[in-house]
Image (cartoon, rainbow, N blue to C red; front, side, top):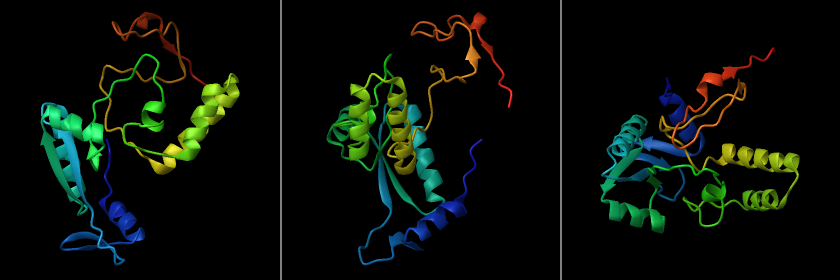
Length: 191
């Protein structure tokens, strides 16, 4: 269960220099910035349309104005290709060998750019040292957690995320995610 703390959200905005009025959130400086965002969603993806409307509903409770643009698949693809959106709801699938470059590399999904991450990705790609690669990815994770360029809203139930304590013959595949489940067991670690 996710608990939404509206007061914390409002306090965070105030701390960042925003002020709430009857017209919504405005920046306290002379920039006349307001928080009004568009969420683009493919209208044929009914689950994602529900997600977009739920996000709009929840953000409206803290005074953030959201316009849900449920558009045709062709229009959606144009928004995505041109990176012409504030927020876009994307149904994404992971490849058998997922690569972080899709999210952080050149010409990534959201046009996110961080020079330090780019350097770390390149260094990890060139390295053969497992510990060095792990350190690079740990640093990328730290940067991600500070900047949060992407937010995963939910996972499809056809994905398996499991504890590092899971043991046995763990070989899920595209045909059977639970292949070998009869050999799986959890190893309890003593604290």
